[in-house]
Length: 253
Length: 253
Image (cartoon, rainbow over all chains, first blue to last red):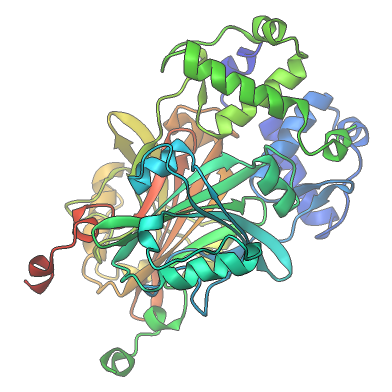
């Protein structure tokens, strides 16, 4: 029954196995190495395949293992720090933006996004798809929702191809004065399109970062960004030298 | 074999089933309701138990379902927003702190924490365990690591019981001038003790928030907080009225 495992003891067998496996990963395997198949691993540790699979899933959650399409299970490199918080007040699309526009359509957003934008539930908005790469790897896929009211100067752009159209919308957005932003982070699972872009299976755990951009007392745009949870560690706030090595003169300038 | 599913088509069967199940949850079930058992659900939707289980796991990742010890699988309420970012420069333990001290020991921290603190790998540090409740539910468990160097005025406190001892260490920490903090968020799995505190199974997915507190050009303390990923949405930055409803007079005051 589905609830059997829910009544098990606090430290079930797969948890103990995970500890043993972690030690094996540290001592016997190197980053990128392909693990033996499940049958062989189960035999080696004297456990059932189901127990092994649970332990492997935990290690995948913790970023120690990666399952890759057509490759198998490999030992993961340490997670990359990916900056998510905002140091400056900037709109998406400014020069130092980490995101590359892919496409732009006009579509009805999900109900939750419409509620954040305070547009009507059936009102179409500019929907930009953007992607973010780090060290040549795709780390995140974004949908950026911008209602017509935030880009009032936009004239007919229907004939532009996707990425150029996205850049035009972003350029128009800069005319608004950005007042601030707020963010949420939660666990999610990759949809089919995000999964394709991130080179993951649909349903893989992802970190979903939702950002609201505020201008003129309203939510001017909403970004829903899906980060690979296996390879990314999201960083917020100052990580550089300014705060760690305090320098009064720099603050005074 | 373990890799079979990794070679499957972009929209596997469990993904389609998830969509159908989501609709059923919206139309037939209310928050808190217990789902039929896996056997009955698999029969109803005409799928194998393994397929059903995968779909249920996705819905759990997305916060739509909850598996609870001794209860079964229930329809989850919407996730709670839990403020994680810092609006003010404050040390842990100040009056508006959301955390309750539980215990305090002196122990060698994990290697990753020792590296952040720049203490030696075998140097014991004050290790506070704290818990955070929201609406009467445990939402997070924290380990707060404070090296001796950050609380130099601390005299013999070995005889104090756990929570009182934690408060003494926190009070001593306030003597340092806080210069800033940086945070990371990543996916993890609940360890046995965290799981007990959070009323989850060991290995349940959690959001791990690591905060470094900077003072005197050094990392003065490190907090590793484990948030329930099923019930929590972490919020960063201003969510209140100041930025959304812009008021020039308030800014001028």
